Structure formats: C-alpha cells, structure tokens
Length: 288
Image 1 (cartoon, rainbow, N blue to C red):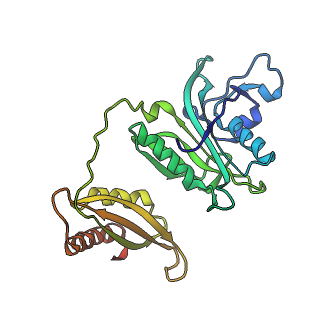
Image 2: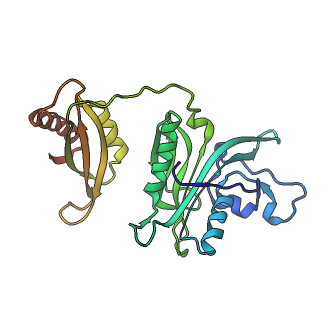
Image 3: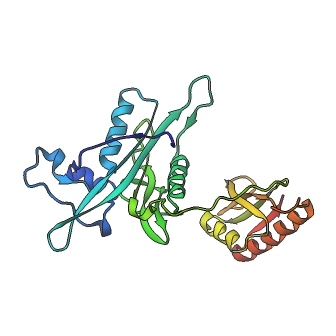
C-alpha cells in the first residue's frame, strides 16, 4: 500500500556481505556456515535480509530504474551458544532515487520517506516505533542512522547506506515482525468533530542535542485539552539561530467534539504549553 514491490531472495549470502550491514539477530550472534556451499557467494545463512535486498536494488538501478522501492519478508538465521541454529522472521525495505513523472512534481526519496513507511506499517499493526540515533551501525552513515524501538525494546534499524560514491543514495530498514504485532487487536475509531478546528504553530529554539522524541514526549505528558494532533513541521539551524542550537517548529490542531473553540482559548493553551517546554528544555519560543 506504500508503493513498494515485494522481492524474494536467497537465504544464503557471502560472509563479507553478511558482515557489511547490521545483523537482525539477537546480540549479533555469529552466522551459520554452509557445510558444502555452491560458492563463496553462498557461504553462510543470512543474518539479515538487507544485503541481498540492497543488491537487488542496485541491480535495478544499474539497468536504468529511476527509483527503487523494494521490501522482503523472510527468515534470518544465527548460530546459538550450544552450537545449534535458530531463526526468526523479519521485514526489510530499501528505497532510493526519484519518483514521479517529468510533467509532475518529482521527489527524491530520503530517510524520512522510509521512516514514514515504517511508522505506517507499525500503526497498521497496532504498534508505535521510536527512532534513536546510532552512529555504530555497520554499513550505515553516521548521523543518518537509528535503532528502532517498540515498547522500549530494540526491534530493528533504519539508515542511509554508507556508500558516498554511488550515484543514487539508498535507505534501508529492517525490523523483527514479532515486535510489530499482528494487527489482530481491535482499534477504536475516533469520530471527527463536527465543529471547526483551529491550527496553531509553536517555534522553539533549543540545544541541537535535544531530540524530537524528547519534545514529543513532553507535549504528550502535558497534552492540552482538545488537542487533536500535533507534528514536527520544521527543524532549522542557520542564520538567526545561535550556534549549537536549532529552531523546531511544531504544528498543532485543536478541535472540540462538543463546541467551537475560540482563538483566545487556543492561545492560552499554547502559551501554557510553551512555558512547560521552555522550563523542561531551556527553550525559547513564541506561539503562533
């Protein structure tokens, strides 16, 4: 539903390719070697779906594809402490290139496009994914990579391939399907308000090391009445912002199921939230 085509790859790979990307196995357990491999390219059972999936993406790009969006669901394997082997199912995705037609608006796929797909998948299955920056993931670019957590437990990885010489940047992710859930639990349907909604923005200047997840958690903890939703609009660093700081603009939508809200009511709630965030993070901002 997100525009990705399914790929089916071999469960084997080379030891070199296996070590080049983050393994999707518990604790980075060692790979299972094949006793009689057909060649060095098929020497071990895969510990991640990503190496073969990335190669499939590159194969398509080399043959003229403007963009690739591929996914695979399959099993990964690892050697256990007792000398045996174990396995589990994961889902992996790779994306990159330009989508759209010349007479339409063309878009260069990036890390946030793939992150949005992961969040959509998790939401459909009744989970919430949190991304935490990580600079120690093999094969992924520091500053553009993260570990993915579900219910506080590590469930996968997300990032840009560390391949600066390639003409098309590729973005990858892989998660354990068991962590995502089954989607079998019934989900409540929120009936939209019949009354007009009011949008408002809030721009906060804060130290660059403060992550969006921290700000979002603080908003949730002090969620104003009748706040229907909020989201990150812009993070800006540059002219007009002190060195080592960023200006984060949040956008809010207020709607009451019972009546029309006034602009003054919304302004009061925004101001109260601004004071909370400023006290929590040492931020400065102006509600809009």
